[in-house]
Figure 1 (cartoon, rainbow, N blue to C red):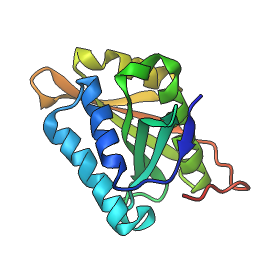
Figure 2 (spheres, one colour):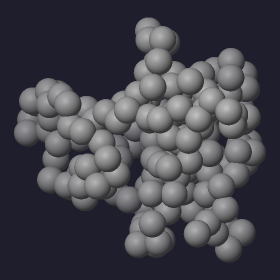
Figure 3 (cartoon, one colour):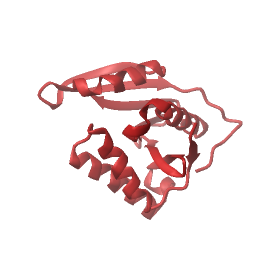
Length: 169
């Protein structure tokens, strides 16, 4: 298992970009969007920006990260915006470790549901299986959302709250 860190800083920008680019899943504009969310969280702080981050470290290198936050139009829904693990360490179950930590943090902060959006292209088939295998339900499919033949898939999981044990980022 890798080590989870809550200490996010602008120095993580290069590692996060490298991780996103290693997968070949994301368009350039998506990589830039993720990095702009990091910039905002570093500048304003995670609580104020609403963009929470964790990173996973293996052998003293950042190999994965997750970005998530409360939905500002909900009293109890949170969204996972990004979950990425470097291609070179994909089979070490680091995605599962990051997702479990996100779920714990969200539940500890009073979140009831975690929502995840992903693409419908065949490239994303392993991603869809990953979420299904981790207890998420596919609740919405929006055909042709991202482009021709590329639906938006929305997954949801109800979280168990652990109010007695709060996680502070």
